Length: 134
Image (tube, rainbow, N blue to C red; front, side):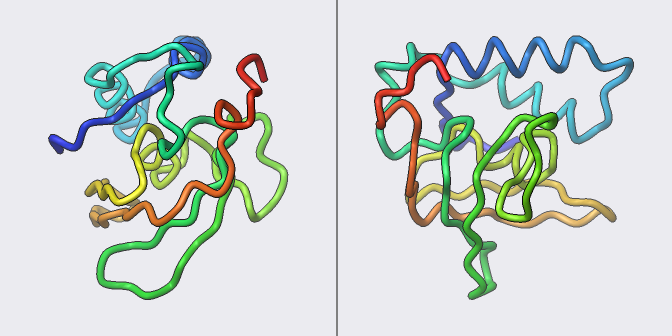
């Protein structure tokens, strides 16, 4: 388990926990997400730092040791419609939530691998844009 601090808005926390509770059973990946949520610092949406990845944020990130940069918007599973979006329930999506620019987090990936996700930039964050009730 990483010791990287993560910050999650109370709105995102409530919505993600509600989705997890509806699942008939949790995969190991979703159990890991639940563990991360359990240790997160929860703040009101207005108090979320502007450089932290929240739901519906657009983030630039890369994997440690790889130069390829990704730009994705973090969404709920039922909102996933484009290649430029990533579900909170996807391994990389789970890793992004709550991280701030400059932080990195090692996260288990499919096929028993682990990769370290590095946050480069939060291009858009709903809370920063004043969209607290999205």
